[in-house]
Length: 280
Image (cartoon, rainbow, N blue to C red; front, side, top):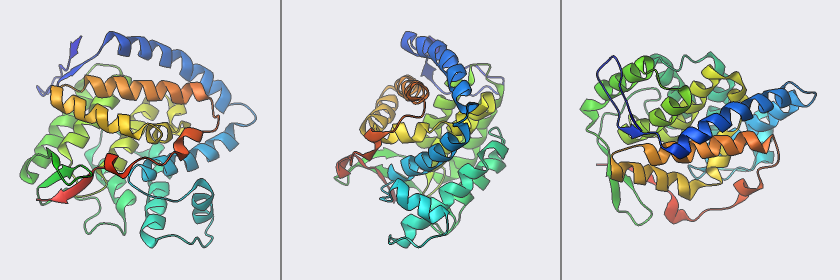
């Protein structure tokens, strides 16, 4: 089923498949069970553990090597033998996710604030849109996606947020579409992946607060190659349907895991699956 109508007139192209519609119904039931778990005697402990897992997952996708134990030590203020940049990435992710429930996911200003927190000390202009053109490269140095010209970024982001506010589609769908479209625009020189993943969680949490304590980013990391494949497939089709299917599946898996250990997330993925931003 084709979707995309919004009062603003901008319509990101996406198809909600029959499989996606089935997963939406499953997620609605699973989130109720997850709520009961979070409200139980181990709820606070689970939230703390999942905060660490979220940080590990979203930074590991970008190549960060810190373990859950090391991340715990960093957040406790203890010294960790690790590259300074990786430690700062963890601190930035903690700062952003620690205040995620206070972000307005329909505010561009809050998006810029989130990017600033995520990339403080890592980029020259945290919280500012890029002022150069960029391309996404594969592990062999081939350009797999040329992002829109930097001069178009403010208007593209404004259109995307206008659609996000106006669309009457379920947040589950809108959050996936936003995540894909955000990565396609690549509005920042660095930190786009981390920001897009955080913002999808912010959108989901604005619908059901249980998602603030669900480490979707961690299970995405454990399926990192599929993550990039879903992005590439959506780009090839000019339709974010494949990415919607991928993300809904990972959201559902996260809820069904009910806080169990995410052992799959410890798998080290091949370097050729990592994409990098290169200025052009």
